[in-house]
Length: 415
Ligand code: NAI
Image (tube, rainbow, N blue to C red; front, top):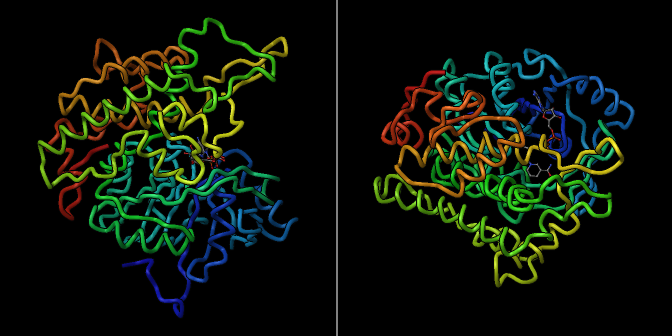
């Protein structure tokens, strides 16, 4: 398989797409791996220039990890896909899901025919969008990570970043689905952490807990808060401020995903394996086994998770120096259209009702000004800016399972 070259071979190109927090971590880690010739594709704003300047000034990128600093310089940075992605054998999208489409379209003509192309993390519906955009490359392997392995922030742009926390283990799914073990093995070496194979990208989409946690807490904390605004010190703690009522809401959303899981497992038996679609509490205790002090209830597990300590509600400054909820936050603009709405669409195909998820989609859409659900159907004016399967010609559950889980043949999708 293409990127699994021995160390004596010429390194292959790894094209990192994006110039944000995650890219500032992945680039120096990967630059130390002799298998890869690392390039960054940064088309957004003036990021390519700022990266190039910073890397030149600093002599590379340095990331502070819990086990010490790691430094490395990418081979090149460019805002043009034809330069940064030329002949790439591995493409890593490290950007919010709403940028995936543009990034994929730009790199597609320039990568190798048998490249591995993946998103860190995939969020929902990557398995529908990516095959459509890469239809000219029938031998490409797609993959998606369940989450970004690191909680990380840029220190100085183009120079440094800090890893605040590392997940114990991260799942990866692939398309074709049976390639996941090979991808997991390769990423384990590249990322230096436990990457385990998942059964399919459908499992990945349903196991995306960010779609529950971020919109769910936002909605739970604020839906009956009137016109919230706070002094800086009063901005609510996002996780540690979780009330039992908000935890109940999250548990109900999670239960609806579990209903969908059971419905799919019953319908398709062993053909669709969804073992990694955990309840939210199971996921939290599994992922943060060492940092949750009290896992007796879901609310306590969130409130006592030291990895979440001090993290506040996303806010923006208001006209009078107060702080207002930031409804433009990715917690809503990424996790609703590229998470919850995709899951809701799959539930619709499966005939599974999701009243609580629907309430959260409708409530948060009022804040963002988007429209997805109308009269209980996903026909709102912004549905084209999601990744629901119908956008890619998938109208029923059989076609969906055939496209995502079925054998090695490319699914019949249209963009
Ligand atoms: P970021 O916000 O730092 O970086 C985003 C980058 O994506 C930008 O710098 C830009 O290069 C690119 N981008 C954004 N909008 C674009 C557009 N319209 N067109 C082209 N490129 C665009 O994001 P970050 O923090 O690196 O996160 C990447 C992904 O990982 C996101 O899905 C995020 O939700 C997820 N994640 C991040 C965590 C973190 O601690 N940073 C933790 C868990 C998940």
